[in-house]
Length: 62
Image 1 (cartoon, rainbow, N blue to C red):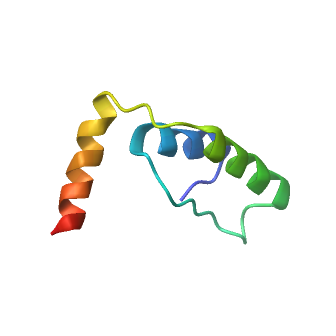
Image 2: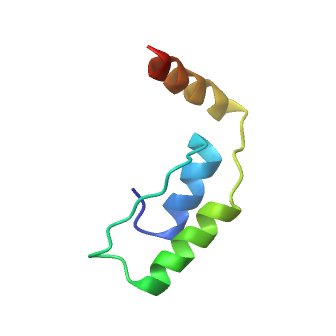
Image 3: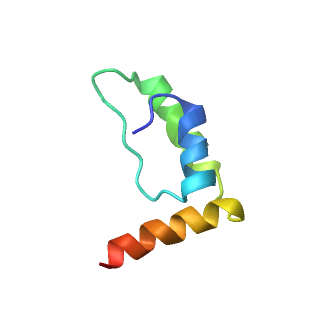
């Protein structure tokens, strides 16, 4: 769940997220557009973050 563009960007860069969520009751349309744009344009950085993503994927397989 992201409430501003920076956390949306980091969710992709550090966690390789494939789902974006935000509260419609607290996020206006223009802020929502900014959040979505940052999230869509960000790319997973891999590297030190890949180990955490692998751990999550292992849990999901169980």
